[in-house]
Image (cartoon, rainbow, N blue to C red; front, side, top):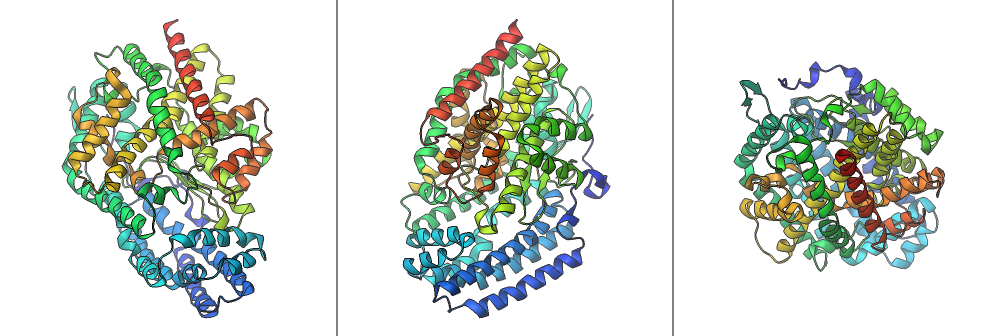
Length: 598
């Protein structure tokens, strides 16, 4: 029987991340906050209404870079602790106070971009030539001017930002702090349930009765909150539509894709090709799971089970370090240093606990170590999760070291490429070192069930759902829980066809994903993995040297996603790379099916 998750203070700190890597004490954090606020006041006195020469503009951007550098670490200190324990009153109070202080800071600094957007292109471009580190920021200001509002409105939007962005924090509070899931009973045994237990344990549970009961009781609880969640989500997308209209975009898609530096046809291609070209192979994979497990039928609750559950190897945290060092050694000794530091300096928060964020992520505050959150369950596929998150860490360790803070973030369209490259390098290493054909088949099945299912199916189906939602938003059609449920059901049933039974309650799946509060993010997983698949193969086949990929990581946000891909010879402007990856996934699935039938 699964036990209730421990509380945060009950954990062995050895396996938690070390917040002292940011600030050694709470007092030092508070002092840093006070100091940057004082310097912001001085920044305002020095530069407000004085950005009249190229020299003054350049000096101001340099000072602004320093402020953002420090705010990056200060903001991370509070948000990261909340992500590991959202129940803690101390964490809630710290985050609440920080939010109010950041609001005040944003209001003070609002003059800066407003004044720059009122400045002539000629003067801004002249200032950009004085300092390479400031060039990209100023060039973006020039591009953004056509969507700028009058300064008074921009200031008002900054002042209202905590309210305008409340939907995301509301969602997390509902999900992680308020929702309490009911226990369920199978064969006389009682099983506790929670977001973390469900998404990290029960979805993969071999016993079909336990797994399907976990799904049904989990979704029963979601159903109790669906109308409030729908209202919160509608408020969020209506805000995005209002901002799109205010800033003169033709659609909410154009508004949300603007910072990604790609057009809507890139999003449409990812969704349409995967929905049509990959679906048949994934249906065959689902039916293989049905046969392997001797199921009476294949249902939505069965999609994440293993192809070979009796072979599922366990791995300790300590053993995972050596596996990752070996698997990612192909990227060179400098990258190995990053892997070692992640373990030795406690960048990684492993344990599951009450109030901890589900899933995994990596945060890389500027000028500091990265912070990787996972929910360790001791299974080998967690090594793939770690490889993924270390991919993000490695990316931003390089970008942060070689770029100024305002130049580190590439387009979201690219953001998942370094992480998924690592996943595939890790998988290929494990396949090469497999001790039997059975182990090779198992690793290939993990590539499908974790790397590709997660990114090319789970997140892609979220993207297909999003596209339908935003189509309604653009057409000024209202949303409700009923409408959202039906949209999600239609997407799921279109993809899986007759191969998988999708019950009505599966429509509530949209309630599980915070990505819907992050713009058009879900489709970028498959976009990143498209590039990641190509890059990992080129590195493995020695078509490119690892150093060429490292140079891409170092470039940070100084190039568009298409330019970054072209640095390693991949053209993302065509269907070719995506179709190649779909063919690779299809062939891998067919190899797994042939192996299991042999």
